[in-house]
Amino acid sequence: MSAVITARNLSKRFKQKAALDNCSFSVEQGRIVGLIGPNGAGKTTALKAILGLTPYEGELTVLGHHPFKDRSALMQDVSFIADVAILPRWIRVSEAIKYVEGVHPRFVRAKCERFLSATEVKPGMRVRELSKGMIAQLHLALVMAIDARLLILDEPTLGLDILYRRRFYEQLLNDYFDESRTILVTTHQVEEIEHILTDLLFIKSGKIALAASMEEVAERYCQVLVGNDRLEAARELRPISERKLLGKTALLFDGVTPSQAREYGEVHQVGVADLFVAVMGGTA
Amino acid sequence: MSARFLTLVQREIWEHRGGLIYTPFIVGAVMIGLFLLTGGSTFYWKSTIDGSGNMAEGALKMAETQLNPAQMQLIAQAALWSTALVWQMVMFIVVFFYCLGSLYDDRRDRSVLFWKSMPVSDLETVLSKVATAVVVAPLAMLAGVIVGQIVLILLGGILVAMHGGNPWKLVWSHLNPFVIWAQFAIVQGVQALYLLPLFGWLMLASAFARGRPFLWAVLPPVMLSIAESWLRFTTDFAFSKVIWEFIVRRFAAGFAPVSINADFGDTNVNAGLSGTKYAANFDDVLARVASLDLWVGVAIGIAFLAGAIYLRRYRDDSTS
Image 1 (cartoon, rainbow over the protein chains, first blue to last red):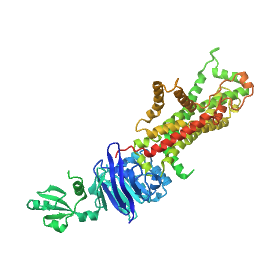
Image 2: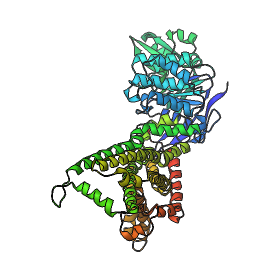
Image 3: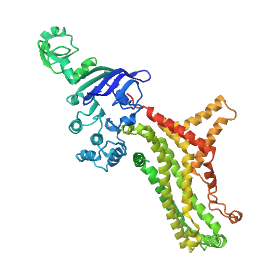
Image 4: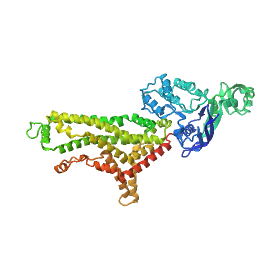
């Protein structure tokens, strides 16, 4: 597996605050990586650095390019969808297609039209006449028709209703993703995408708090529902978070084997949301 | 020019179809409307001499008997050039605001993120906008002028005929619109170079502003003059004078690149009418190409555009 993104000591400082503080991480080809962090943690700054939209300090290589220096070359291999607001509101659907076809060597018009034919989006419509869900469908159709190697999604389903949200990721998985491609996604709706993620990158105050594959997470972390009688004993194993649940206490352990944990109660897989809360400092 | 670049220019036309493409034809329609109004009113012009005959008919008879062909041609061509200047003024304002919004509007509505997600460099983006301002807009204007003037010429002849005049003898035989259009096109070429520092400055302000690009375009030269008056680093505003003269010359040229010679007194006309006399300073406009002023301006314009390209790349507006 080759690294699609490699960051070493990536930093970005705004006047007083460091948005990214010596981040080092890498993203391998064929993975779907969730970049997860609270508001203002540096997610968008990291994505912007990767997309070549902002200068930065440290080393960053994306598909062999220096993103800020070679943004236009890099964008032949990288696609980007942010929340629905970024498609220009004045443009017609047919114009958007013609534009991407005109500037992007890897865009296949027939593919895009095929994706759109399954939607309500018609060529003569202007973006401002479309619903948020339809704008997201248009942007997704444009992007899926580009044979890119890295797709960056920044809160792509923000403001969409659940039907569109679900269809968005389903379509992405079924019609687009394969092992030659890589997806890096940020979202607040972690529960909705945790089943499609292969890797997690937690970011907290500009630093990487956790970088692990989902397999590693399953091996390393477990959650145990402990009754009050065993609570003190279980606490000896140093849980990283505790939370009351139906008269019992859910303890989250790092590095405790399931067989060890089973002695104290019912063992569960850790959800990404629970893990996130635990790793970020446990203020639920 | 590559198909890619044409796509970028096409994009500008899609976004600004109303301002850049329709405006010249709307100007034409308005001028035709005004012509019909005044043309219609001529039927009610009573002669001031005895209150019975029509004044317009009287004027036509006078023209027929008292003006020589050279004088008539001068009047006809000068009138045609004058109408072209109406298009010029309106489109100057349109292009002025086009440049001011060119690198700002998409940052304001965040669609810049979409444009920047395409494999298009900031250099190409800025150049496509410059090409739109100095090539596409003038071409659209030329098309509007040609269509509009053909209609005006036809209507002018018809009006003369309705007043009992001979349209061929009084109007059409004296007009050579092709000369006007050729001169107008050549003037646009000179304008593209001459106005480059102005358009470049507007685009620089557009790329720089986080809000109100108009203020950012206007304030710096004003502040410079104020600073000069306070600090007195020159005598008699020498510095401001140079800058403001430079700016005023650009605006004057932007609104009216040629001045029209309506002087058809005997001496002027009979002393050999050149084909360009009605556009009084057409030769001066051509001579500008050889002037230092124009090329210094081009150099300044390129510097401003380089700044705009740099800012387009480094400006990172949205918060983390």
